[in-house]
Length: 158
DNA sequence: GCCAACGTTGGC
DNA sequence: GCCAACGTTGGC
Image (tube, rainbow, N blue to C red):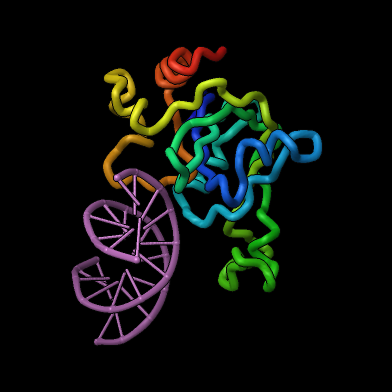
């Protein structure tokens, strides 16, 4: 069970969708569509309203945790999977049993000093973070309460 | 742009 | 069920 899990990290390429884009979205909310990895999907299905999210810029210079968001709607079917014209269309997904879900998140804050991947690696307490594991490519991943606290402290945020 | 690591697909 | 081929991710 994932009961009690409250913290997550979600990756986005800033050239596609950045923390600034989230901050400027209507109601500062967005639907996290496009996830096409079962493990990441399962983590989204475990999310609850109010769960806190580290917003991470991947394929960025530098790659970094840049902000905080929160879950405002639990998992529901990602409609882009049924849209033939969409980049994330999945012809194998059955509308009566949608394969892919998304959640809605809302902007909370942009870190005054973003935390680069390098910086995170220097912190011994974070050595077990999923993000820092060799070869880790998960775009949605759990963060422990301890890791959350350490990251926010490093960022001077609360 | 390169490429290691990983996930998925499909032939057998 | 195995595993080679292929596609993707994402740091560098």
